[in-house]
Length: 594
Image (tube, rainbow, N blue to C red; front, top):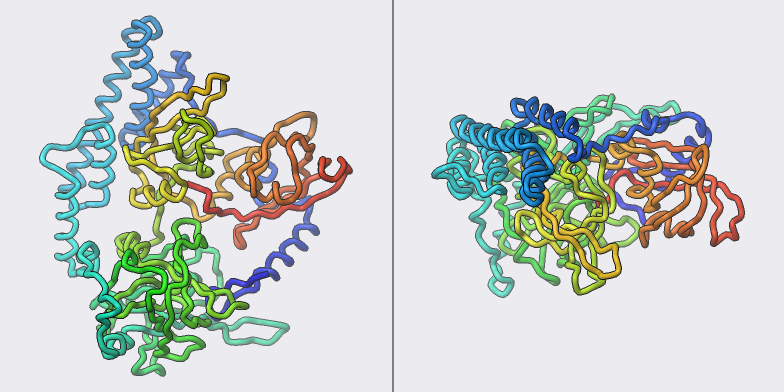
């Protein structure tokens, strides 16, 4: 098995899995996660629009939300409006009372006004992130505050960054192009940048092994991007500084190339576990800073350089080429594959081009294969950099669903993303989007693949309303499909979506996103029939087939390792329906969540 290393104090993933599986077998009847003994409560909260009492209860909920979460209130008011007013108009006004229709319309108008007022409050407070959220949430309903555009909001945001002295953020959208390789500058351009790379040194005290204490040190690399002492590195290098579950000693320092014996205290400002990036601050003036380039200029074979501290050896420069693009190693976004020599300690160092511009950040390599290394494109860094500067953990938007790219099978169908599973109580569930609906556009922008949809959502702030366009696949013989529109509020994506699924839903339903197996209850106890398998999923590759009979015997999740294990009793067609006990393991995160 290939071993993926993340820094010089890496763990062997095989050992982790084996150790946890042994623990799992020893504690079959002990539940390590609070919901493994779930009573089966389902958090689906669709409104019964045929029941006036249900409608009025939803109206009460919206009124209570207007003062605490006005965007959520607006989305729910619009969905209520569409289901009451539109249906009333189409039925000639017989379906709902005139009084109820007028109350719903007023509730929607009031919700719009409250969000608009919140927009102006954000502008007056120069809170441009919230201003963007409120503005975009109003825009999906074709309502824009007088005199304001996204361009004007962005201009004000850039001006506020300049007033703070944050010229790094102010210049994100004015990056100069890289120098063509046939016009490559002299060696002094690259050598001049080397002092801007530092060694990250995390002292974690002593590690006790077999009764003997050993120095527990994490070594990585980082690079300055701001004259005020801000630098970028990998999250996994500094994780012990911000991980709430880490209970040991941890102190962060940096070492400059011109004085490697001096340890300079530093602190973590912002971090992103999903993209494995972090922003660190020191109280010194850096000798040099890097400018961020544009990965759009890269192509296969482009010459690149890696600077870092492999094995703690400062000012190490290696070179290579871009070997591949679009490698899907992160939960969100693609990474670059490079062949420049990378070793433990390089993590967090910059990948630069011939012009000295940062094109990527080193984050991993496959230890057993020389020259097979990976880096995070600078476009992803620039995308989250404003949030890193804001401080704390970075939040990414998602719709609370698990899905796959949908390839059309008939002329009436359009390519998009199939919502295979919706997390109860989150965006798609609240918006009334049924499972297996196909999403084809967000705010009018077409999304033909899951990757396109995820990238679009990365550019939106959590707490923003989006308009989803799509259709329900045909279920009758005529092959027709029904086009639909929904309004959904984006939530903050958890680091481990699978853990939220286990917490909010039935174990039997959780099998679909976690193992790729849809279960249908058939008898007493916990017996189910397999009604559907996702091709290429864990269940599919484990030899399960449709109509197999399974019984869930145990269900345990370990949040630290991000692994879920289950033990099931099964009768499988491919095994001649012989009775057997099978253990399955799955990650609590996946690139299929959106």
